[in-house]
Image (tube, rainbow, N blue to C red):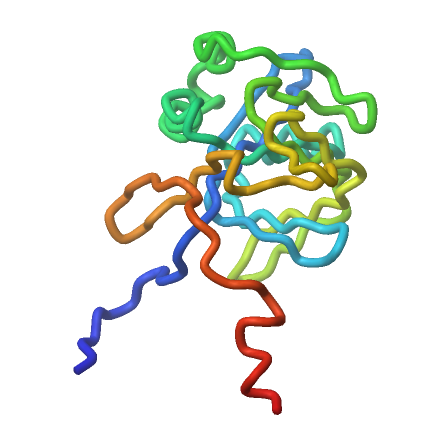
Length: 189
């Protein structure tokens, strides 16, 4: 039997995305955002609130990076969601993480996070119902230890965090249970 739960953002799991930018003084800012997804082979969309310092920085620099948070850096990833760059000027410094400048876009890469997409601002979509930043992915970089023997990202090695909105919990990627475009193929016959 099904039970009505009311109106809830019932998509699970959500990514734990680390969006990194520079402010007008070249200071690194990183925010934790779960409301983002791939929206094309070379595009990512982030549904954010316009008042975030990160959004102001993206507008200023027309660039940003998006890293996938991992279990090794859960404390820092959560901190980036708790603290606001609008009120804490030394937010990134407090994390004790390391930023290097991307050579592809005008944005920092947080060295400790294992997978990073370097993005140019493609467009901002603002309607009555949504404020979304669309980024064109110009490069993806990853730590070698999260790659498989063919040089592709191995999600089982990466320990990528997922966010559960129902319990406000973090979970880590787990075992592979099927193969896309093959697990349901027998139903096509």
